[in-house]
Amino acid sequence: KQGEIKYLALPNIEAVGDGEILRADLKIEDVNWIKDEEFRKPNVLVQNAKTASAGNRLEIFGKLINGDAAPIASAVVLAVLYDNRGNIAGISQTELENIASGETREFTAVHPFTEVNVSATRLFVYALRL
View 1: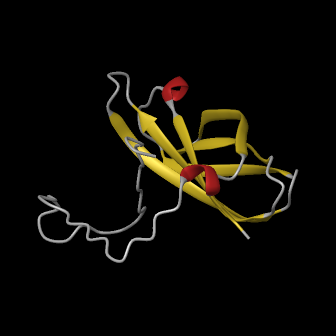
View 2: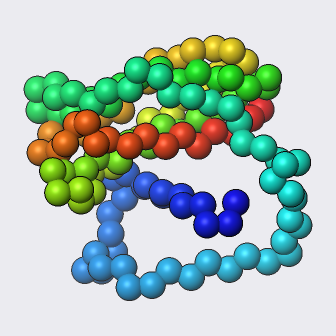
């Protein structure tokens, strides 16, 4: 949808050069637009999500529910961690595969320990149907 914000996280990818990204170009060609009501997002929900310290790391865990009529081929759960000032302090993700319709699956993502506001963690789910 227009104005929708997406977060893209590529964990453990080394930055090239001095690590400063100055520009990114995206070129889309041969577009065949489909109305959003004809291509609806999979119905996935996150339940009982929590962020907690576990020794030298943080664990972000919860349950993912496939409320869709179709099975989900893969679902990426992206956790954005914030510090006490509201700045992004880290990002982690985990991927679940082959989630049946109506199935509830537990997930855990880990991140090296850093000072974060555990109650401010935001989760985003990107899922693809089979």
